[in-house]
Length: 291
Image (cartoon, rainbow, N blue to C red; front, side, top):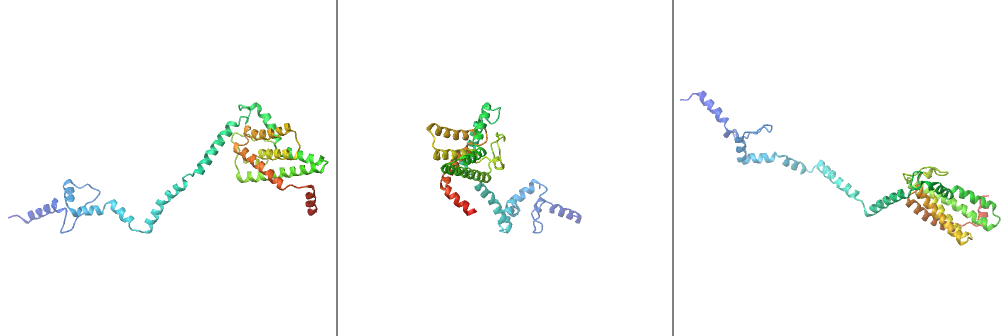
């Protein structure tokens, strides 16, 4: 007859057998995830559908799915955060106009640097730099203002005074308009430029548009329209205007687009001067109103 101790030992051994791991009085036991169970326990769990369902419910994928399907404020905020980068990427896509402008700017900078052959004495055409600086001074605003004031003072005829007076107003208008556009655009001068220009002002550190080009186009059109000049002199006036604009690029003062826009702006300014033309009678009337 077996002893009670043997029965107890047998009960312990039977309770610790692999067949009792799955259930204990109708209750399932869960093993620790930090330790790897023996192979016979893995086989037992794999054959038990209840353990399979428990593993599926505890999987990280299931937990993430349940968290995303909860529909709380955090899930909606996360969805909006995931959509924001896509919208930002759509805004950052360059348009056709932006690509065209960027390409034009790159070509402008490259061509301006290639044509700046008189930017310094060590350049390929450095020996021509003094001559280009003389052309630069010939298109400066101060010599033109001084020369027009002198001609207005020395003129004896009413027609000559009228022409010089309107040319003086055209030069003042050009200075104001160019200064306003430069202050608005604020485009820096080319990197290879040397700031050794004659009589510069605060807005002269900006490049767009070229004030010399606007003045050359305005004065050339004004002189050709209101002065009686022979054919050689008319050609010289045109060549002077073109040379002034070309000198701005050769000296590295401006980019090509600055000079091109300056020529167009000066050409249009003459139309404004003609529309605002002031006669001596009209000038006397304005002076009488002021007095």
